[in-house]
Image (tube, rainbow over all chains, first blue to last red):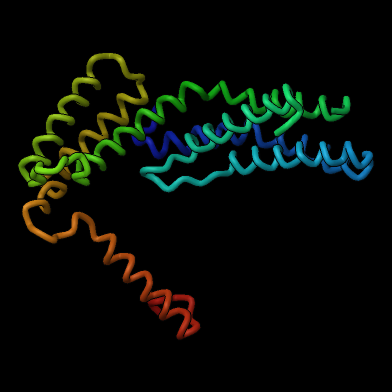
Length: 96
Length: 139
């Protein structure tokens, strides 16, 4: 059965997104936190940038919305789009 | 970029790419949010150009026309099941509230919402809490 209010639908989508992605991102973040102290200075700097990205993704997934005008899932989706674009630029050019 | 960095970057990218699974629900949510924003825009009277009259009649006319348009949308089969359910509920609420929503425009200087009053009460309560040291206004 579908929820009959957009606010409830928004919450369901946001929860599903968080359940699916949060654990994986946290895993990567933990790996990065473990690797940073062991890495060389240059590599540690690069890894810390990636750790910041992971933190950004976690923040996006845990966004709160103020209904009825601000939908958390929509905002989270927009934020993740921006992160994805930035990661793409990073992969191509090596710059955030 | 080191190999380890490249691997982590690829992993992060792959995780973020999983968001496409929610592309469709997010498009639906954006459409539904737009209904609310449109209703707010219509009731705010921001649509009025210089010379336009914002009155109960003009706002009501616009609102009713828009509601009819939405009602058509809800039956033409273009919307998903979720959107149809939400739109039906939204139209029902709008129909119930219509007399209350469209009645402030003919009275000059009468505010459309009581947000200003609510804000002033909040400021007063915050000040009281600071002065008294109590957490609860009612205690």
